[in-house]
Length: 493
Image 1: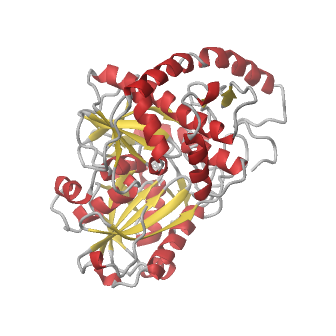
Image 2: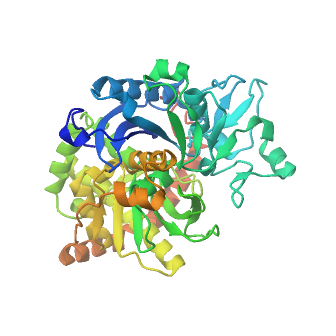
């Protein structure tokens, strides 16, 4: 994201929205104006997830809240303008997490990650200390406002939630089955509605001025789609985050084997979401760290080296199951086809190509199920900043590809929800029209598309060979007490 100086003439004197985007790897915050321009921004990385026992994946200590505090303090320290211009806060956090809290809204144990097996199981409280249950957004709302409330659009997964009513179910059997009685759950509001106001205590911690209204958004993928201006059923959005998935607007709550239905960030609307890669751009960062390069400049160096590698990476292919899908828990990641000629740029390119080659299969399965074609591929998330990634996606999918002017769609989507809530714009359509600026289209070269069609013919059949191998490895691993359920060795972070 481009950081402009706080005294730029473009800043003007109009209202500003404070956008908060808490993702799986970092928290980003920004002051955004009514035209969608980022006036000032800050970012704080999250600490590595911890694995206290097999299947358990948590954010250490109070890391999510701490990262929001640190990012906001850095933001306001760098902003030389009038904080009184801020008229609303849009809060977006990671989906599928679970916060276990005491009566004061503080964590009883570290926040359960979306990768934790417990988020797919009924709630159990052997300690007897849990008095509140919520998604991560509900926990952060409490810390910001002191009110136990949350967005209704962040309750995917195992919650006693009635999607038709966009509220908690009235069926007591569902509450019992999930282990989540109504008295443990927050009040729900719709995207764009007020969650509360920044409390004096939260203001002292974050330096956000007290009394500013905090507005609901949705789950992070839906907020990202809103911030990218995803409104047309002829467009598909590829979200290049820790979890990579493709999304397109949907007309009903009915799902399909090729996609599932997610709640959109516009009340009453839905998104159809494809299958995905559970550790997508995470794998890019993993490899960067593995070869000892720093975030940012290190990725730019790898991109430059990979751009010199021919399409197909010299026969090197990446099977991107660094975190296995739930339907095939035996799978592992793999790099296949080394012959001694490849260097680190080739490995990096193979990972990027693996992302594109995997996601085009999911994208086309969704097209087939919906009976419609996607004429344009929109790309968002951290991976969208790389020109090489966009070029590979255009060539592998054979579709014109673009990103928005603000690569972080979830950050801009948070600002849009706050703008609607605060009355800066009268509705979501007007806010999207005013605040989202499309980037230029990248048109695929037909010769490159034909080359990747040959690569794809090989890649699409890889798992027919790797699945038997990894099933055997998993069965052998069951006899090995040194390996844990999530594939990490005892004592590994």
